[in-house]
Image (cartoon, rainbow, N blue to C red; front, side):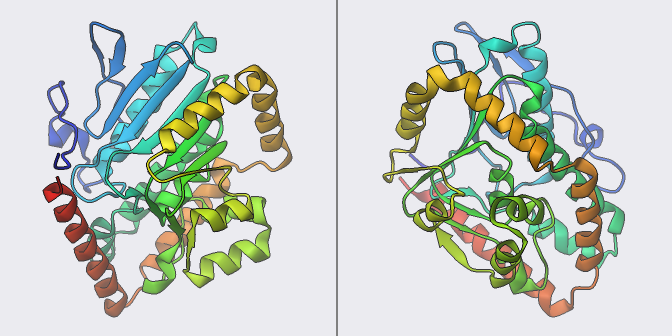
Length: 317
């Protein structure tokens, strides 16, 4: 079956209401739809379902267009987080695990919206760059805190996680990845650095020197290599990622409270604050405005490559 983005059963938001005058998305509240079997979220680019037996909220990205964090998807993530908090208010212990994966074949996420970046940079729109970056890190920071709910967060990687896609995974408690999936921070190839969390997260997980070396190299790493580094926690055979998540949940269900406490204590020992993440976004925005036309053309070539990937995914049976 050809890849298609999820079609929402809710009337889409009016574009003018979703977007400010500068083209940057505005926050929206959660949208919920009642279905016969249970209440599910109805979002344009996120497919969400709750499995009551295990207390697991399964979410899969279904990007509209290229598999990147486009501004509309950021709106969905904001609504998703707001909706989770609202939906489980008063029954917080019903939610034990939150899982995020992707339905795009062979890709978790390729990162930020490079097409948007080139447009903002050419327009010298620092405010737009900062707004996009801060939208990203606010979502990541809320995820890092587990939305202040008693749950364990799990990133499910069944395809490549590059740039911001890799950065976002670093905010999860547990990463389950299928063998052969690629991880990397390629921003150096067009003169930038990953400005939405990678420096903060990797410095705490690997140490500052190793984090800087990884970021500056721009190299890709396999899931197996990331497992050796301790970034990936569970390796799965290709096509078996969801089964591996279920096995992890079943294996650890009796240790759920202890594991949550460990993750909470770790955040106290090595806190990543929102002001720190936002200051790095400011540095990233300033660096972006220093890029040359040649750098921007490299970004545009990457966009073209992502478009070809989208075409292949849509045509594949």
